Each structure stands twice: as structure tokens, then as C-alpha cells.
Amino acid sequence: MTYRLRAAVVAALLLSLVVAAAPSSAQEHPAPAAPAAAAPSPTPAPAAPHSAPVVRVTDEMRAHQRLVDTLYFADAAYGFVLLLAVLALGISRRLRDLAARVTGRPFVITMVFWALLTAVMTALTLPLDYYSHFVVPHRFGLSDQGLGGWLWDQAKGMLLGIVIGAPLAALALAGIRRVKRWWLALWLGSVPVMVFLILIGPVVLDPVFNTFKPLEDQKLKTELLDLAARAGISGGRVYQVDKSKQTKTMNAYVNGLGPTKRIVMWDTIISKMDHDELRFVMAHEMGHYVLHHIWKGLAFGLGMLLVAFWLAQQLVDRATRRWGRSWGFEVAHDPAVLPLLLLVISVFFFVASPVMNGMSRYFEHQADTFSLELTHLNDAGARAFVKFAEDSKVLPDPPAFIRFWRYSHPPLGERIVYCETYKPWEKGEPNRAWRAGVTP
Ligand SMILES: [Zn+2]
Image 1 (cartoon, rainbow, N blue to C red):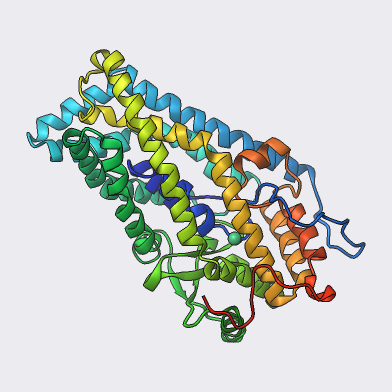
Image 2: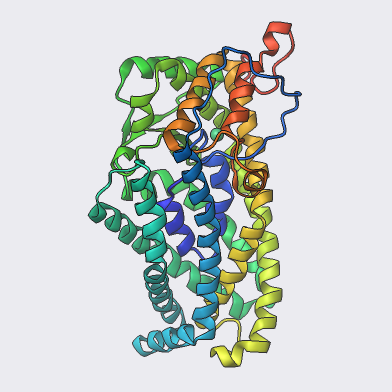
């Protein structure tokens, strides 16, 4: 799951590892590419029938999965170490002093500091990012993007991180300066920010990296509008995006809110799947839409963020008293504190990822159920998941710990079995997720 925008916003946003972590788990990568862990299926999973399509597991697939999993943890650990180093080696203090030379106004000092910090962090993480997100996908034949294009995407991500993050960081420090229980102030402030970012994501942020246009295939469009009408979605918007310039893997997702809400299909999925498979995938996306997963994910993420900010105040205040002097700050509203705040919040969300992903897997399983009930395309669904696994070179049955920690989706192997076996209509049993004729 390459996540430039997410990475950018995350790197950028003081207030919101959640923009990345929380709502996006429900919101993005709905189908597959970053498949994940065991959604506890309410039905005992029977063995797949003989005719079930099977993922061809290759040595290359195993090697790829192992490497990607290792890099995930290495990336996280490296990020934490870097933030600690920026504090302990006095880099944060020096950047603050540099920013203070430009201007005397605290708000602007923080904005300049944020820009400098973002640039330094981007430079220090670039080698590992290059390996993880350029070398590895190329080695496994998952991308043919040129180095120039890739670097340009990184630069755009960094600039976006500065433009969005700088005023937010300055606002956050102003809150810390004025409010005693600043964790609550920061959380309250982050609610409209999160809603706003999700709202503008599809129309302002995403187009920085890719070109979006209404679905071109008119026959497919008619089929999908038909499906949407049955799903209870009126006036749904379906877009296609030129992801093939960055990756050969495929995906589709739902994002936005209210007027910007939409379903987006990567051009790669349109070219690789047949219409039945696409209808199954799109019905899954419609399930997210109809079941309000974006709002629910947002609410869940904000709940986690509340805990994160509370913890942040406890730890930041304590650490400032104990190590602040040697790190170059004595109060928690000093811009040089920002790496510490980022460190606490990012460690929290890393440790909480099994919880966030567990929630996400539940949503994903619900969306699969919705899709099967709406379409009855069991075989096409199973075929689509086989394609996802083989195409993205991810194991259908990853190690248990990996599923638990980092899978935002049930593993593809489980989803294939579920597709082949979930047919309550054959026994006259009621649906669980999709109710005909009920509009949300
Ligand atoms: Zn999904």
C-alpha cells in the first residue's frame, strides 16, 4: 500500500496520525492491496469447494511479503529513533533558533520551524523510503515509475506536509500555551480539522498526485449505476484515477464526505478485471458507503486521538521537566517540543495499530458481506481476490502476528473462502448487511 498522500499528511500533521491511521483504514484500500488480518467470521468457515479458485503461492510472493513486513517495522522504528535523535542531539533546538532569527512572532516561528523540521525529517528518511517504496516495488515488478517522477511525488508530499502542517502546528502550540489542560483543547481543535481534511481530500489533496476523471467505460458505468441504485445510493459518483503511472497493483476505494464523497477506481483495476469482478469490488465499496464506514471510522479515530492527546500531555509535561533543559526547551509550548509531541503520538498509534486494524477488518468483512448479498457474485469475488493476491504478490495466508498487527483487511485467503461459502439466500436466511429497498 503505497501511501504517499497519507505519508505526507501524516508526516505533516501534528494533530493527526489519525488522518492516516484511523478513518483511512475504513476509507481507503477497501479492497485488497494491503490485505490484512483475520476478520473473525461469524460463520464457522467450511472448507472451500473443489472448484474454488486458488492463489498460486510463489517463492517470489513469499520473499516480497517477508520484505514488506520487515520494512514496515523497520520504518516505524527508524522514525521513532530519528525523532529522539532530533531532540537529544540538539537538532530541534537549533532549528528553533534558526526559525527565531527569521521573525520574532511566535506563531510564525513555529510555522518556519515546522517547515525546517519537515525538510530535515524528509531528508533523513529518504534513503529508507527510497528502498521501501521505489527499489522494492521495482524489484518485484510492481511499478515502472521513473526515479524522477517518484522523487517529484516525494517533493510534492513534503510541500503538502508543510503547507497543511505548519499552521496546524502553530495553532497547537498556541493552545498549549494558553490552556492548562491542553490535551483537551488540541483534541477539540482536531475534530473540525479532521472533518475538513477528509472533506477536501478527494478534491484538493489527491489531485496533487494524480488525475481523476469520471469513469470512461460507459457500459461499465451503466452497470455500476444500476448496482448503486440497488444498493440504495442515489447520485453516486464514480471516478477513475491514473494510478498506473505509480504502480502496477490495483485497488479501489471510497473517500470524501458529503458533497465530495465518491468511489474511485484505479485505472489498473479497470484494465485487469472483468466486469463481474469489478461489480463485486464496487459493491464492496458501496457497502462502505451505505454502512457509513467513513463516519464510523472517523468517530473511532477521534476516540483514539482523545487518548493519544491525554497521554501526550502526561508524557510531554514530564519529559519537559526532566530532559527539557538538556534538549533546549523549558516549557511545553516551545516549538522545539514538537518532535517530542510527534514521537509520543506516533508511538501511541503504532502500539494501537492492532486495535485500529481490528476495527478496520470488521468494516471490511461487513463490506464483503454487503457485496455478496447485493450481487451474489461469489465466484467473481473469489476470482477478484485471487487476482489481488497474485498481482500485488501478497500471501493469502500471512503469519498470525502480521495479520494481528498490521492487516487492515482480512487476509485474501479468508476472503476467498468466505466468497465461496457465504450464500444465506440459498437457505432462505436473512441478509446481514444489505437490505433491499432500504436507503440509508
Ligand atoms: Zn473495503
